[in-house]
Length: 194
Image (cartoon, rainbow, N blue to C red; front, side, top):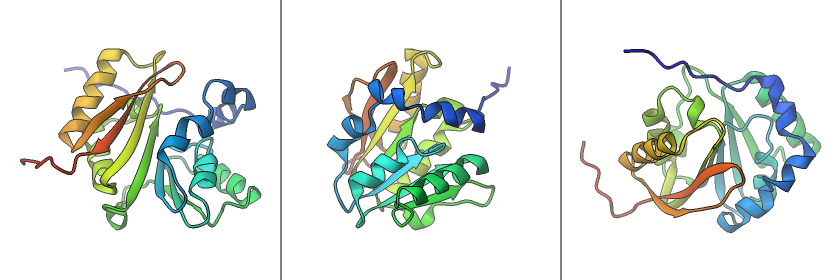
């Protein structure tokens, strides 16, 4: 059986992801406002340099928290600088994933999680969705989007099946420019059978 190689977006591409023209097709405020309120706890998983993290912090406000999670130190470093410059360092909690990282302290604490154009880079999707499923509280939401240019509809739907196996069900399909996208929710009625 051939092993799939997962490509991770290089850190220097993070600068391109911050391009101001990106707001014309991926406007964070418009995209995320329906799911976020002041005081919420949110996760931006695969946050890169914080294109979405900073706007999320603005939406959850000083009473909220944003756990900005990435596997690349340079991405986290730039995110931290940007958060400080924007006066959001008290809201944004940067998290670098290492071999020893666990999210036990976030179990059942998260109101909203963003998985934007990054699930296809993860070698173990089941583990990722299990982690997100544990973090998100009952009734919490997950915006899951993948770029159509990198991810086929079939592969996206396969990821949804994995998410559902971890207690996250499709609440609605949404339109996100150039992307396959859904909002998942943690199903409070589902009893997982191991």
